[in-house]
Image (cartoon, rainbow, N blue to C red; front, side):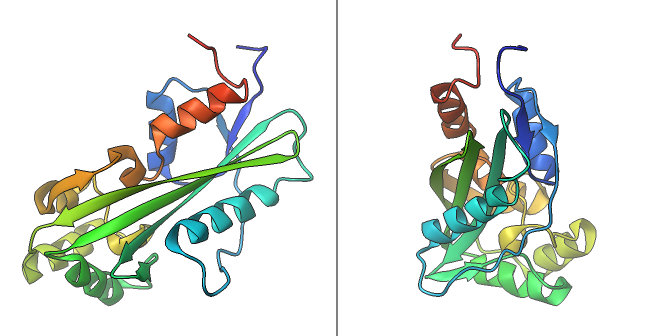
Amino acid sequence: MSNFPQIILASKSPRRQELLKLMDIDFRVVLKEVDESYPDGLAPAEIALYIAQKKAEAFDEDVTDEVVLTADTIVCIDGEILGKPNDAEHAIAMLHKLSGKLHQVYTGVCLLYKGRYNKFYDMSEVFFRKLSDEEIRSYVAEYQPFDKAGSYGIQQRIGLIGIERINGSYTNVVGLPTEKVYQQLKAIGCLNQN
């Protein structure tokens, strides 16, 4: 593996780390604080790509031969962007908004390698059944989903009991579209071609 560039995952998300491990990809985690604001007027996919690139740009001066992998996931319902909740009541309000409806999950990914930003995204449609107030409140109290766009983790109880179906990539909803990431890393020569 030494003839392949080292991959740096610039994410504190344990879910993204776990997905890369499950893909048998060697990486190390390096974190930097990045302002995740974005300009008005961007479409959902553009927002995810914009923030993913901002996260990668924070490493521009620090890396030479490594690959920096950044990602940003957003939830969108009826044209409204749902980011990470501010507190429990905000999380509960978001989940009530998602309950019984279709929403979209966008993950933007940026690979910084040799001064170039390779950006791509994936979108999945997620259908929640109607959730009871008790289901929502007990989930928020137990799981404290304050680090999750849209206030839920698909792999946690609310996702397991509430999501009827998904159109698109499951791992994209978790936070990293693994099939696309794998193909792009292979394309820039970062992985074994086997």
